[in-house]
Amino acid sequence: QVQLVESGGGLVQAGESLRLSCAPSGGTFSTYRMGWFRQAPGKELTFVAAINWSDGATYYTDSVKGRFTISRDTAKNTLYLQMNHLNTVDTGVYYCASASSGLFDSPLYTGQYSHWGQGTQVTVSL
Image (spheres, one colour):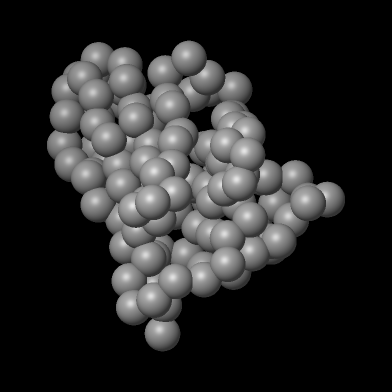
């Protein structure tokens, strides 16, 4: 069974950077869009960023615009999230997700994403 595997999380201080990666394990699948979501302690899952696999169009939640960059390497079939100027509100478990379709769906709509990773913890301290 194909799974998504995230890596790159960790503990950093405010103002520092991290780069998350996400790649499928156990095979490949058709990808229209991939996204990053996060869940802060005691809160719901929220959208962070997404990218359309074919044309590279990107989408961000307002709080990360200018600080985070989502990208993909189609040759390596890998998704990235470069996170700069991290602050404590960015703390949470970060999940990558993949959608095989979604032309008419908002990137924020979790229902379009059929594959999810297990999550990677990002902790930002003062």
